Length: 238
Length: 238
DNA sequence: AACTACAACTTGTATATACAAGATAATTTT
DNA sequence: AAAATTATCTTGTATATACAAGTTGTAGTT
Image 1 (cartoon, rainbow over the protein chains, first blue to last red):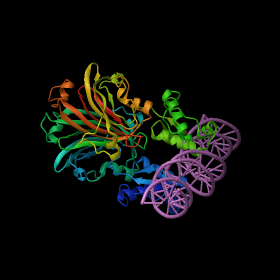
Image 2: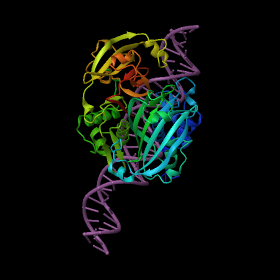
Image 3: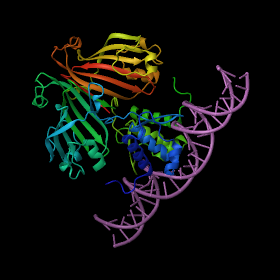
Image 4: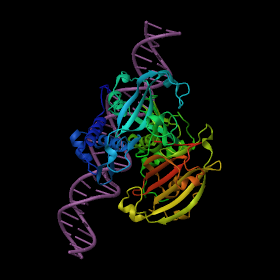
């Protein structure tokens, strides 16, 4: 728990409501307590409550309607973040299993890294690891990840297999993804990757190079990934 | 000018500052006038100013630093919107030329449309058109677009060849894209599309289905596109 | 010259209050 | 019974004020 010594009240309210929504205490379409009700609950004023609700709106947890209330939105897995969804309805909730092909290790950035780096970032070095992600025992997604090694103590010893990378970063280091960019290609899998994904060398794959910026300056997440979209597709929200 | 009868003050301030930034009155790293200065300029209070600055922060026009000020951010072309960037450096600014394969026409939604539609949207019908986009006389991107036909008078007679669809919607109908989702596949171009894109039937293509939501409720933009990423790549920001 | 303390800026958080305007259900009128 | 009105919810916008806390330059001290 490395959080700031004093957490602002509006932040606590946002976190409380977010937790409640993600825990399932509300379902899609439900109304949150009205602003005035929340004022009483937290013994504060509407300005503070609205600041908290505003954050929930930005994060996509609620929408708001004048005269009606704050409406809980459809849960989006990985808002703004690329996620993998099943081709057929109902398969979307199957969990991806993950195999670490190369354990996280501290490295210097490669000379010809695929994104331009800031000086401070270059100096900090990076943590690098490679994962292969499966759905239904079938390999779907090969991903090489670089994270700027900035205030991430003990990261290399963490278990990345079962938990989401983003969740680990948020819960343990207060690092949140804020924005990003991605480049997209369709390629024929004649690279060594196609063997890992268990496809023939002529099989089309989605190749993406992404940079995700976080709330910490100069701490970025870079990933280069290859995905077999024969049965499933890649999906993202923005 | 179909805007609401009364524009809130904070909205006017946001628009003013946004225009100034986009016009180039400020450059990257510059500080906006302080909140108190803006209070005097607009004869209002900090709460209103902060609401305006908050919107600029969300839209990515500024960042803010405690004790310092509001810092103008790097301009981003097409925030959150898919754009096409050249493979090699410096080619990114070449304009895409556009050929309309099928002129915009009012239609009913197809029974098996690829996104689930709201009832009101279904009732409104849609405007449909097909475009083929070229870079350097080479066809790169085939795109079928459906727009909900909601308060878009004379849209079908507009010239979509030279101007951006998003710009037309924003300038003429005050329609702005707010968020969206996209699904991504890599396919082998054996469809009729590959002939239009001038590739062999085994050539890998990026296939995307996108839904862009706008500030107008129930007015969405749907597009299904195929892109040859041999020389260029697709890029988007979120 | 280097350090310290302070003043004067900046944004961050919060309270208290007021009225406008959309949504909805109860009430009254027709 | 149907329509219009009203009351009472809700969120949206706005003013006025206060103090906390980060940043920066300046004046004073060592």
